[in-house]
Image (tube, rainbow, N blue to C red; front, side, top):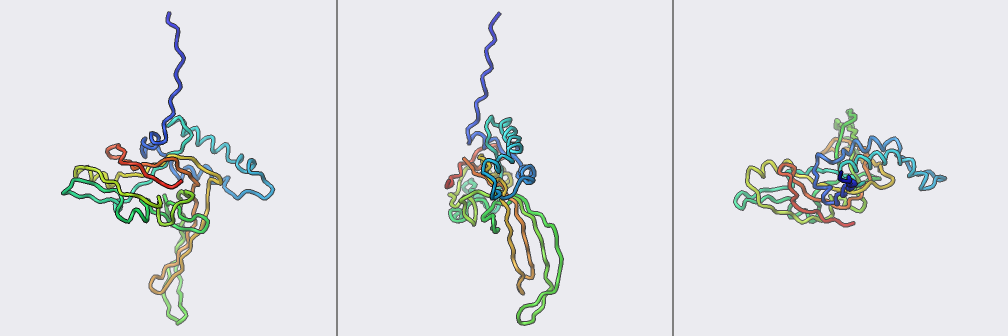
Length: 250
């Protein structure tokens, strides 16, 4: 009888291999926030860092277990759809371009500003209230003003530019047939693999007052995961192909 051999441990995926699993394997930002939100608060003055971070341990262990089931690593995979307006197609050359000449200044993914969560990448936005009132300026000009309250969720990446992520991005050009390009413009993602960082949930607020030319008063509350990517790629979910890497400042 042959002696059974010990099962070989699964090789953990590299960062790039994990990101290339695509959006179907990515964790949902809102689900991660839901598991961490009840614990989100500032560290107490008389609380050690170990005590503070220890309160997150059960939730983080569940997140890590889910990550290991997918990649055999503790890395969290996140997916961010790229706006079709950030891509263009040249039918004469048969090429799709991801990014543009201004991407080197504003990045590939848009970000928003909020006090406390400066430059977060939004993943969802929900209107949670609205009302109207009559407002007037210093000259007595009156306008009906719409007051809107919004709740945003997103991802806060330390060190990114306020205008977008990454702070610089060189456009990627690939040969592609017209029919494939039509699909790709609605199935392109930035895939990131990395780790959640304390305090894990960052909160912020943004306010914009009404003017005569734009009689809308808006207040936005933000909850964002604090996340440090280890790698990022552009991924076409339609063809399941990696289009290129996304360099970023660490």
